[in-house]
Length: 259
Image 1 (cartoon, one colour):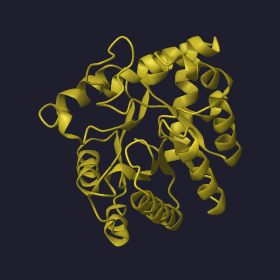
Image 2 (cartoon, rainbow, N blue to C red):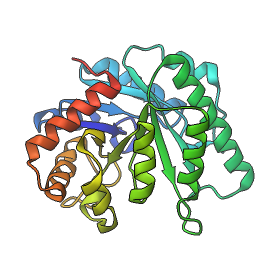
Image 3 (tube, rainbow, N blue to C red):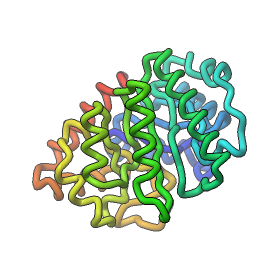
């Protein structure tokens, strides 16, 4: 099992991350990718990756934090020099938490900087996209426009939560879709999971958030990704092992993971 999007570098794990990591490896996890959302959490992700053989890191400034932290291209680029950094992000557009036009424009500007960094280093992007309730699909539509204009084809749409039609447009461009524990209780995503080719799916938890059934409402851990795999297998009416093997292969290929 591979958790391609975790946040063991967050405060929720500050007192017991070592035990959580050990528990995850003991429960079948092969690789964990810790995703940065600010400079400090990006740095912490790298520190963890340097301490554990099968942990990797990403660096990025999450779109909800553009109001809190100034993005420095050179500072983040310096972080990416570590050999355990396998992607740039998470980055993207968030119109659920950010609604001011000035900040939305800043999101786009910083998103473009992340894209430039990924292109320069030939790394995949980890993309965050969340729409406002008032304007469904607007953030996804605008993200697609930016990615198409910049000719980006390598990355994953983390925690995908849009329509099948939106999913197909990302897939046509060459992206993977990341599914979290949300699929264990969100019926509206069942069609997407069923129709998307297994060869384009990544499994993730987004821990400490989005714990799947049967742990919904609790702190999530990387090994809970097994419940995401189970749900994909059930929805597609295929074996658990087939989902496990193919999604692991997808992650290894995209992020170039190795022991």
